[in-house]
Length: 423
Image (cartoon, rainbow, N blue to C red):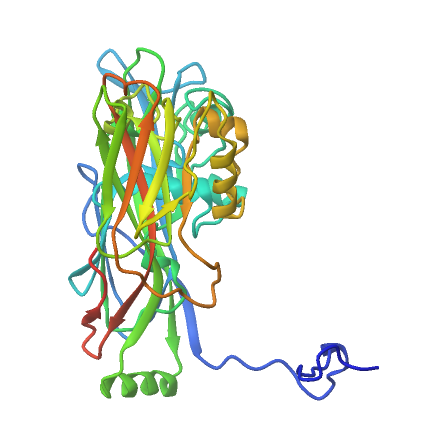
């Protein structure tokens, strides 16, 4: 017998490795999951949490928002429970998407600001499986029940309504959709974390097709996170290295979600998206401007092609796709394939749904995909061009952009953030 490659390494299978055992993990003295209630009563859609770590290290990737929801309808001068006859439901993934904005601060410095776009950030993550599990149980715990070919009726709409029929309440639990919270390193101790949440109003968060008056309420909310106490020797070693002016470094995927208004009556729309660094992935979708701003009879997540003829990203003299999409009728197969390739088909969108209400365009600007390394950051500008077969509708459209960047955040011995990109 001989090796295919004489220079390759040799290993033993574990089945005959009799003299070694698995390595021991020596780091954690103990750990626990801790509940943080809001600092003040939930009023006017404002919720504020403060996590004061002290000597504890937080695992922010295990941070979850636990929220209790209720839907009622108005009859006369009273608010009463809904029934299965009421054509009303909350928006898809409401445990996360009912949030309008989130601001996260470390020691009073903002490291994330959703800029009123958190609902779309949360929806894209769950719809496409972007750093969020698409396991059915995880999605449903967040109030995400898969729609059929119609978002204003059908299985998903009915399932979400059933959670609230006859006076029932539903307690959602979901991860916080903050890029830094998706990386796996523990947050260095003696860091104060503030999480400020603003909720969406009824016209955005509720879907209804009838003439009845409905409202949703958040009647309870808590934040849960996992915390670790390190062995004293390990903690001391970490503090010693920080005191020698070494930095605690966190690499993560920073996402930016923006929107751009496309005015009515135009055939072409061009817009610079980013002027500093080139993103690694961009997702784009079009929604009716009325739904974007909140109208109870329209879904804010109904993305269709809206008579689009072509769409193309321009990044540092490179066009993506190289040959621009040219849509004829409802032939969107090239765009559908590119979405599959960019997300490893994690999205659960079939072709009919893609055409009907989940037309999300994916532009992958990475040369390689790997969790083991990051590519060299490219400076430059990124823009997008859209051409339409017909004039855009009377109310205009809203272009939703979800972009990802490789990023690093570093903290020194005083827990001051010393390096980060602008939020």
